[in-house]
Image 1 (cartoon, rainbow, N blue to C red):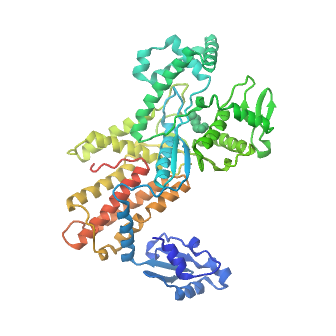
Image 2: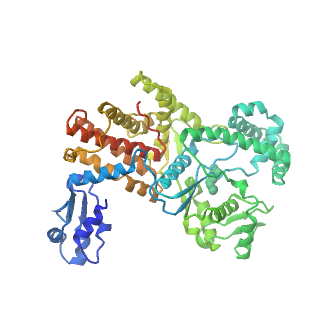
Image 3: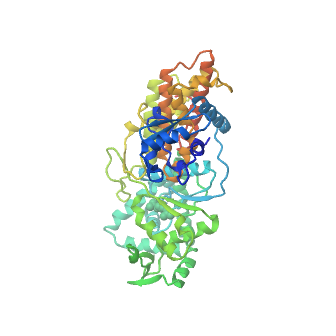
Length: 556
Ligand code: ARG
């Protein structure tokens, strides 16, 4: 129900965008919408207060009243009518909200994009969670969303890893301990190379072998890849993350030449100390490196080829990269080069940066020293802690371990998706698992509460007496419930899943206030209406949590 449009139609002001200027008052006792009339002083040549009074006398729309409050004209939607609209809308959405009608647009999302044989550490939490959430958000809004894991599977380090593997590798150990074993080989290589310079040469030799398509080198490398993906897949499953493509850096080995040719033809490639670069000083940026002096391609070369490939293959309307802000410059350069190449879609490429994550009490994270916090360990710790809390609060619960898994993982994910993404964050288990704070467990707990109330009340009836939903606490809940789609749209427009997280906390808090104020169970009409409201909250929480990758256990 588009109330803003009804209000705009009911005012009929020429040459002024009422629709776009309507605010939602933060204090809902003032009304549901407000028009700041000072914005009209130029057009109407009057003081805001006089304008508000004038407009009020002219305003007419069924079920909406207007009141003057200083320089504002406030609008109130009749609560019975509003309740009816929200219920109709929610009934239409059903149990599991179906995606909105397809909009014919395609969005490619590059997220997680892990590196082979490197740990999947806490630093990957944000790209994985934000990207995985945006993927669900865009799908819900009717986009054709393509999730891409742009694997880091190319580079000289893989030559070193092969050299290390051939010297010290133990297949059984790699089979058993996966990435951990590979990481140890990598760390050992760097340590021993300090005293044995021949190792570096050995590493270079094996990288050359990969480049030349040497069978042995490729088959060893394929195994590293399989082992890494198998380990990472376990974490993806726990987080509910999916991809449509794992085309990574090596996928573009044979797709860069056309890009290099095009850059050459368009006169964009220049020599720089033997290397080939695209000069960007005119745009206040260092040059974008395309070819090293030995002819080797770079990260940027592959990203240019990847962007072209995504356009050719998926015909994206938007091409998104969920990558840490450390790569701001890289993406600015890539997008600029695409623009200089004359790609009409260059402006549809968007870098979605985010801040750094550190773990409370843990030092800096680095791969070379082997001092890393694995994401899997973070999840395990959170699940163990959740299990202890559940054991304490609800020892009789069935499926305690499965519930602890949902709560522990949800706590970690929510923490990642609840702060504005650009901020650095310090991850704290205690904060994440606080059942009373603004946390994942709090949402899950509120959802479980709605399930339990509905269970006791025998479910929600189809038809209810709407006059029982017009008190302040009920109206506040309804107002939030009715905003679901707008909130999801807003989150997509700003690439910010935390908008949904905060909204769900608002919904949960509003419901808990309602729950404290009102007896829900009983046998009258009042109880039926309240069960209906409770059921809408349940579905909003469940489906909203799904969009931010949280599971919604029925009891906890
Ligand atoms: N693998 C890279 C890293 O860990 C991220 C890749 C991001 N995606 C891209 N198309 N460049 O830093």
